[in-house]
Image (cartoon, rainbow, N blue to C red; front, side):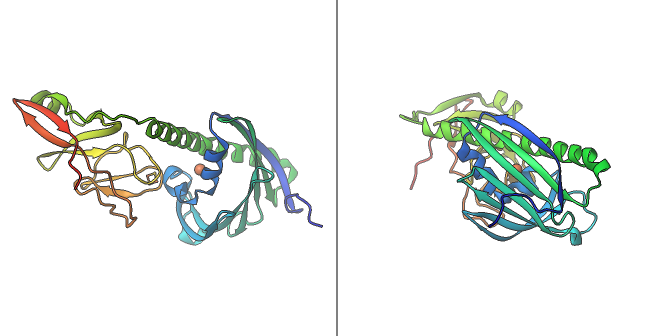
Length: 273
Ligand code: FES
Ligand SMILES: [Fe+2]
């Protein structure tokens, strides 16, 4: 018979609890989302290489943002158990091998959950327990600050998308051309979506402020070498063509068309071919 306990040699060093206004679906999606680790959590992880993934969880080689060498990679396996509303992250190889983090989730409402993560670490002397526990709590506090912001942002974007009805595609007057130019980058809403007007190599152009992958926001993202990089999973897009420069199949939505009329700047819906 197998017992549901962390490996016998690992010591429980502490736990971390947090209540969040997100759904269980968002939380599970986040736990299964291995790809966000080196982007959303770039302060903690330098890179990830996937070994296997599925509905059950994932296994990957990770390098800490604080590792001095790529050779310091560690293999993590996260296995999700929906029946018991928990997932276990086990370090299988490399620094920290034998550690397990058990996270249980408690559902209080459709968008009201709490998590408790328990940290089990091997080779910790009893007089070091509090110090090691506190460092895991600090790490988890930072990771969940970032995860919660992502889950809330994604939920808000999904809600906004779901509420789009009867879109009004009449042209939108952005203002006098010179004053719009003076306030670049210029953000506006049109046809139920968020857009940004920028100047790129002497040309005014508009790009979407929403990532086509999982609706990450480009609101805090600057254009570098004609591209924008999503902070959630690192997909990079050419602002002129909309194409994904990191090889994924999604692309930015076609922007509205800019029209200069009597010294003013307007946008109107692009005519789809
Ligand atoms: S939401 Fe995943 S790369 Fe933008
Ligand atoms: Fe995360």
